[in-house]
Image (tube, helix red, strand yellow):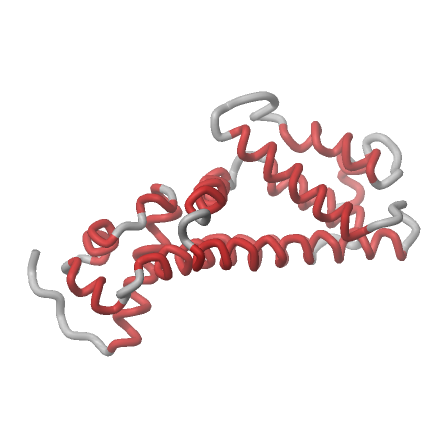
Amino acid sequence: MSRASRRPPEERRAELATAARDLALDDGLAAVTLRAVAARAGVTPALVAHYNPAMDELVASAFAAVVGAELTEVRILLARADDATGRLTLLLRTLLDGTRDDVTLVWVEAWALGRRNEALAAAVRAQMDAWQALILAIVEEGVADSAFITDDPAQTAWQLLGMIDGLNAQALVRWGAAGDRAPVLARAVEGMLGVARGTFGSARHV
């Protein structure tokens, strides 16, 4: 491998962080190793180690970059809807249509790898909190507008997040309703929130 050109430290750190993020998205979080990051960035493993003496932290930052970008994208998407029903309909569609399975793989690996990587575990907890907060805001909006009925919006949000994660994880091995996840979950959510059957499948809300 040719000697890497000299770059300012912050620029080099950003380059290596991008390489780690791209590896996680393309090949899964377990692929983010010292040698793999070096190969992706076109530098030596020693250079990666110099800027990232703790690989656990680089793995954690790669995870946060991947799932944080998805959360930002979803927030922008949900802002297009006019009300909580429309936002929840869009949320179920975009998270369960199979187009985000690369990010699901990163999540699933993070839950497993986080058992032995505390930096990663902390990043996972922070991102799960952020997702729960997003869903909670939608549920609370719906309750305030009398569109949803629930005595515990926070618990409902956690339950919904767990159901989304579970269905998506199962779909990675093509088990169950892998290709048709949104309608399956929509029926359950309609029951949880006391709304009419078919509410979250209606195009008039989005």
